[in-house]
Every structure is written in C-alpha cells, then in structure tokens.
Image 1 (cartoon, rainbow, N blue to C red):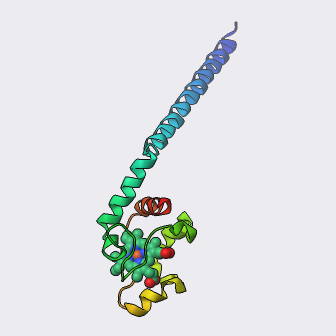
Image 2: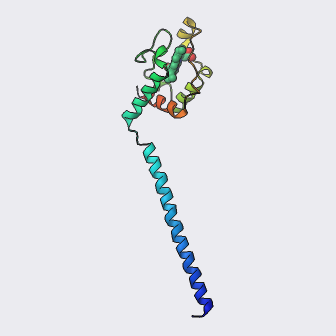
Image 3: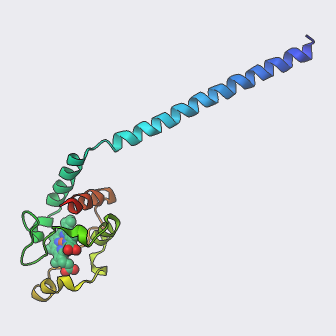
Length: 138
Ligand code: HEC
C-alpha cells in the first residue's frame, strides 16, 4: 500500500464509523420520541372520563347544567350532545359559545336572558378536549 492509499482507507473507515454512529443516534431519537408519545397517550378510557368529569366539576359547569348535567331551569342538559357536536366543534363552542346560535336554546334565553353560557377560552385546549371527550360519551 502506498501512503496515499493508507490515508484513503483511514478516511473511508472514519466516514463509515461516523455514518453508523449517525444512524444509531437517529434511531435512539425516534425511539425516545415514540416513548414520549406512548406515555402521554397512556391514559385509558376510564381515566380520560374521570379527568373530563373532574374538570367539569372544577370549572363549575354543574352550577348551571345541574349536578349530574341533566339540566336546570337556567341551562340545557348535557346529555346525548353527540347528536349535535363533533369533538372539534364542541371544543370550539366551549371557547366561544356566543358565536353559536341555535333556537334549541330559546327557552333558556327568553327566561333567563342574563344567564349565558360563559366562554372557556382560558381553559387549556387539552383540558377542553378531555371535557369534550367526556361529554361526547354521555
Ligand atoms: C352561567 C351558567 C353556565 C355555566 C357555568 C356553563 N354553562 Fe354551558 N350553557 C349555559 C347555557 C345558558 C347554555 C345554552 C346555550 C345558550 O344559551 O347559548 C349552555 C350550553 C352549553 C352547551 C351546548 C349544549 C347543546 O345542547 O348543544 C354545552 C356543550 C355546554 N353548555 C357545556 C358547558 C361546560 C362544559 C361548562 C363548564 C366548563 C358549562 N357549559 C358551563 C349555561 C352555562
């Protein structure tokens, strides 16, 4: 082997090592990423339900919608609302209910014009998602 050939093989070897190292670390990255994903999605159905209900209680929804969300004089029942809402639609509604008009609510609007569905744009969207998940399974 000439000197030049030796140098070329050293460089080739180095490239190979770097390439392999690069592959290995890349795999670890995506493995970590997947792991994170899995752990955050790990809540099972019943945990999600409990979260949603807990958030509903914590945010005082039951004050108007009734202890078990079956409605009151002031606000409609939150039962079977999957007939009217998709998950995204419901989240949007909770963030800005005044943008939504429906004569289903006339009865409440006429009787108690000062009691309106408050906007919950201040609640974290993820939590709104949990609330929506809960309401859509009732
Ligand atoms: C101050 C009373 C009040 C509170 C508190 C309240 N709501 Fe309401 N909500 C209403 C009223 C009144 C309506 C009827 C809609 C309207 O008049 O625009 C309504 C409507 C709704 C609807 C639409 C129901 C349907 O049939 O489409 C949903 C969903 C809802 N509320 C969820 C919630 C959630 C979740 C909370 C708590 C985070 C909450 N509300 C807190 C008064 C309230």
